[in-house]
Picture (cartoon, rainbow, N blue to C red):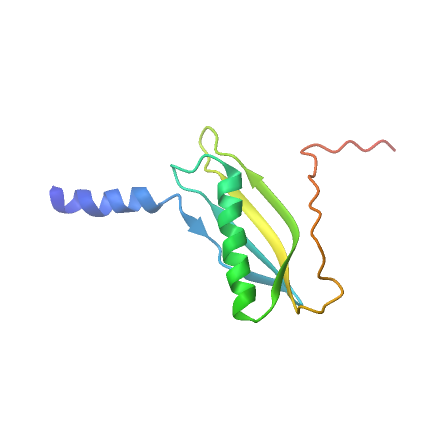
Amino acid sequence: MRVLFAPILVLILTAGCSATGVVQMGQDTYMVAKDGSFTTFGGAQVKAELYREANAFCERKSKQLMPVKETSRDSGYGRYANAELQFRCLDAGDPELHRPTMKSEPDVKISIE
């Protein structure tokens, strides 16, 4: 019985820690997403991990991180905290490399026609 308990416990503890890895979306544009674990309650904590991963990815290419879009959600009933980051890896002299000004997007959009 103990032989089965250890592997099951490891699966349960690591089930909430999944990441997609960095995925290319286009020229110099990438996306990375991640779900937190059962001990991660805030989406901001997951987002910070994604920024570290994205920054390391760009540094390996000798480029600099330029965030494009980010989203995150805190944990709740039946769901883990999660986050997504879209970013570019740009050369130091690239004119698109500037101080990021991230804007929040509303959860609900109302369109009147």
